[in-house]
Length: 300
Image (cartoon, rainbow, N blue to C red):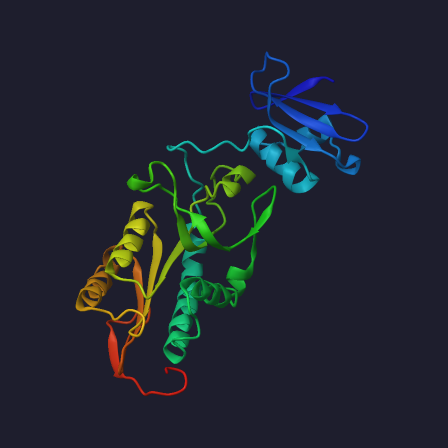
């Protein structure tokens, strides 16, 4: 079988009776070393050199993503490679992100209102994550699918890898609680399936959520957002006195964070159910409000 080139990489197609492989040379002068090497097991999805040329792939990575996503291929090489520490994350469309911000804030404020009415509806934080995800899915904008070329994905994702590893992680990335992905910025490099699998797409919006945590956890969430230079970051702090009474240090720290919102700090949503009072700060409100708690079946 004759070989051909995509960019500066040599490609060869080998077709058998039951399967076909599309092989990308590691070294263009060395036979037998291929990466990626995509195997297609369904003859109905076999491809030809002419067909691949017509796609005008910008890179072999884009071709491999296409074969895996559209032709049921499976990679037998080590691709997609681990991203290098200085690799360039995909940049999102800022205008789309601005349109998504009000939808995210509506969902977060609805979560706070539900928490005030029914503070023990959820026992653990992960359940609260599910509730926020459901609220986000009420938005038509956030319900849409993103077409990234070789594949489609949703807008809202849970446990998305941090863009930049924190120093103490020694090169490993932790995860954001919930993120909103956006279409790539015009002129940005193509999004490959490897970028998606490795979580190497910079999220447009990030939400960190805590339930019944102390000040240390609060500060760590703020540091996580700052370390990855999140442009639209949200910190949601919920607490109940029966699980963890909120001391003055927590409240003072939240007040300080609210003051820093205008300076590029994360946006703060806060709700605390005390013994006989409620402290509440919805997004975009000026300050924390306090009100007497009227005991009923929802708060007991």
